[in-house]
Each structure stands twice: as C-alpha cells, then as structure tokens.
Image (cartoon, rainbow, N blue to C red; front, side):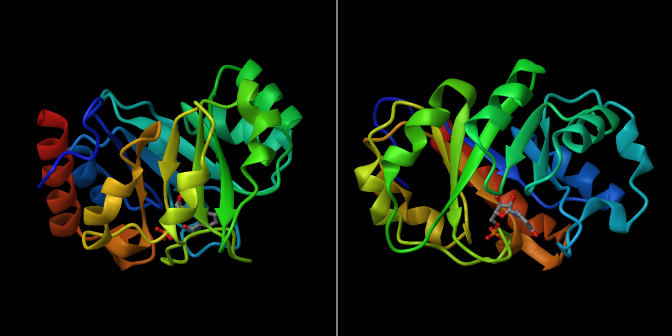
Length: 221
Ligand SMILES: O=C(O)c1ccccc1N[C@@H]1O[C@H](COP(=O)(O)O)[C@@H](O)[C@H]1O
C-alpha cells in the first residue's frame, strides 16, 4: 500500500469509545497514540455506565488518554479530566474558542471537533487556532458523534489552516485506503470508533490489530 503522505509519513491513531477493562488492556498492547473515553451521558459508550474505577489510576504506557465531552460545564470537564488522568480533551459540541483557551491554559492538549455534512466554512476555524492543538473533523449529526457515518472527505481539499487535523466519522478498514486524497494537507491522523466494534464500547481486537498493522506499515515508509 502506498504511503499516505510523501513528505511526512507518520500518522497518529486514536481508538475511541473504550470502557471495558480487559478490552482496554488488549488495545493498549497495540500501542495506539490515543485512547478516547466518552464523557457524554446520552451516549451508549458513556464510560460511567460501567465500573471504570480502574481508570482513576495512571497507566505506565505512552498512549494518551482523551476525554470526549459534549457541551459540558468547564468545572465538570476539569474535575473529570483530573479524576481519569486525561492528557487530552476532545470537545465535540459547540464549545467556544474561550472554552478551548481556558482548558488549554489548564495544561490539556485540545482537540476541537467540527461536524461536516456536505460543505463546511473553514473560516470558522480561525478564531480557534491559538487555543487548539488539532482540529478533528467528524460527520455532522444530532447525536454529536459515534454514528459510524462518513462525510465527503473531498470537502477537506478546501482546508487552508496549518493546524494539524484528525479525520473521524465512520473510519473503517475499508475506507482508510482512500486517505491518499489528504496527501497535501497537515493531516495528523485517524480516529476510529464504531466501525471497529462488536457492540458499543467493545472493540474487535482482530480488526484493531489489522488497523495497527496498517498504521505501522504506513509509518515505516
Ligand atoms: O461515540 C460516541 O457515542 C460519541 C458520542 C458523542 C460524541 C462523540 C462520540 N464519539 C466520537 O465520534 C467520532 C466518530 O465516531 P464513529 O467512527 O463515527 O463511530 C469519534 O471521534 C468518537 O470519538
């Protein structure tokens, strides 16, 4: 398979929507760059639907923990991020640049998510640029995320920011082969979730292993 990018061939990968202890430790053996935890109560992947007290202890692997929040109170984001040792905060709602600034000043890496349907006004991103580490593009939905649906990645050809971005929304073993269209962009990596699941919040280890092998093969080039 050809390299995604000719110049910088290293891509990060994030496995999101984790909750089950054994499943988490199986995925950690594959060393994803990021692992995400859904902190949105209406989601079927909400972490506190199960006992996740083991996440109150730090782990000794380099995989960064990402807390995924949707229009949550700042105090709650900060207290939950401290409780679960999040390194990164992913804001999946209509959070303002000011909210990103406050959370970044608190020491967190910030991923600000924008939902895309058929088109997107990329000038919206400008005011966020100083306060985020990466943008994350997902498929627009009233559920805010985790739908398994893709958007037209061709829309990203209009991306003009130098900020890295992460691609999300129905990313699967099938469609990762189409990532070559992002060759010329500051592409940071991919975020996978429902297309790698046996059931909500339970990932298929064989599928994630196949993804891990593919990312490793890309990053070796
Ligand atoms: O997974 C969820 O249930 C969820 C709920 C609310 C906000 C975000 C959520 N997940 C994020 O959605 C994207 C795309 O997931 P998918 O591949 O389409 O299933 C991903 O960033 C998840 O972190």
